[in-house]
Length: 437
Image (tube, rainbow, N blue to C red):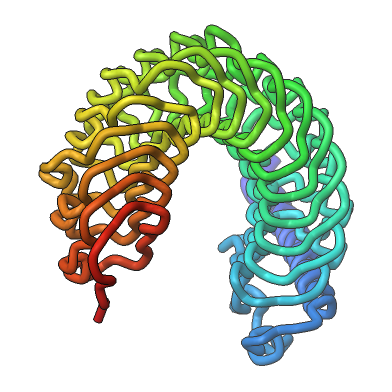
């Protein structure tokens, strides 16, 4: 073969390759156009389902004369120009979700929280295989929690709080990346599924204010990734395991209030050393309050009120130097208020109401309580005068009713400039009634 023939052959190959590349480019561009058109059609379908747009966003901004990637609330990928996020949080929209949203196959984030959406979440959204977060909190969605959430491989956050979902919680979860489940304040009933304990990446489980029954699956207390467990305000019963903190030692918030739990608080609670919020109030816990709670030095909030405890407040509670909220109301405490309570300088709220506490308030009650904003001591058997609370300059709420306080009502109460609520009735005060400016 001659040199010219070899060059000619290479040229033909080069031309052929260029044609192929051109063909592929055209196909890709055609695909981008088709896919982009699909995205635009899905968004326009979404627009038709909005029956109220208080800020006139969709009418004024969502025009086919401008690229949909520039529309308010829309985020797109740079190269493919596909919709990757919808953020309509707080737009005040009223309407339903168009099933066409399921055609936004690049969608990773769907944020519809704080609107007035109604209806169900369409099953067509199960096609969103790239979805990482769905947030529909603070709407009026109804229907059952979609079971197909469990097949979305990239899903990390499920936020359905403050809606009207009903029925049971789905039992099938294949989401290895799921980190947050928040279904607070709905109408969910039945048991908490055992299968939730298989979510190895779950960090936050919030199911408060529903109608859940049965016991808490013990497997949940072995989820080493869990940081937040909030099951408040349900009808859960049974006990919590004695080794509660062996498996969830990284927990920062444990809120089991307003249920029907019983037995003693496990003594190994001290192993949950990262706890900042511990709330077990309004249950039937019995025995004594564990002194081990005093080892939880990161605690900021401790609520144990309205249970069946016996005995007093452990001295070790005085070690909680970061404590801001102390609630031990309604457990039939007797004797005087332990002096160490008034030495926790970080306290903002003290609630020891509805007990049988006696004695008088310390003369220097406010010496260390510079941050105190709320003081609830009503319905006890406390005596003496109350003038010593005048130095708690930040007090906003004072409940001292239904006790045996005596003397006059201090005229300088009017100097508490942040005071909003003052309840002093059913005591043994004498003298004149003060006037506030």
